[in-house]
Image (tube, rainbow, N blue to C red; front, side):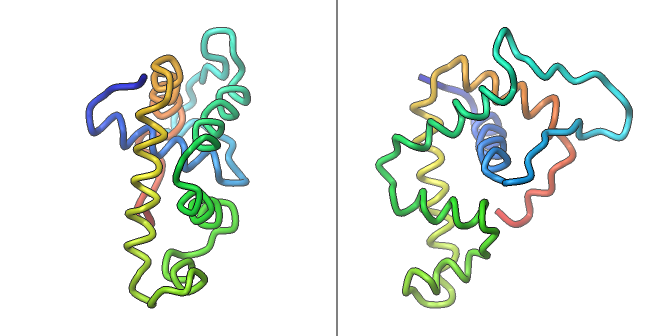
Length: 135
């Protein structure tokens, strides 16, 4: 199973969140033109994205997965998720923390090769180009 430092976990977490956005293209993040390797090993990027998504399908955190999908597929703000869940307005942080726990669980169960591919995706497509302020 995957193991890495905190920075690597945060990078893989960012890749997972980007995988769930409906408009994900993984364009090269930098302004300068560089060639991006769209196939890692023999597996196309689209297949890797499906493998990443499948890590969340087997989670024990079913409610958190639904919140996560609503956040990233439907673009629902954290505070609105709390209201939809019947919680108080300020409970958005609780939902965010629960989603973080779900992601950490999925990453810890991720195969090492997929963890490394996620780090490659981060380096090639997201490094320095993704604004992560809303998480």
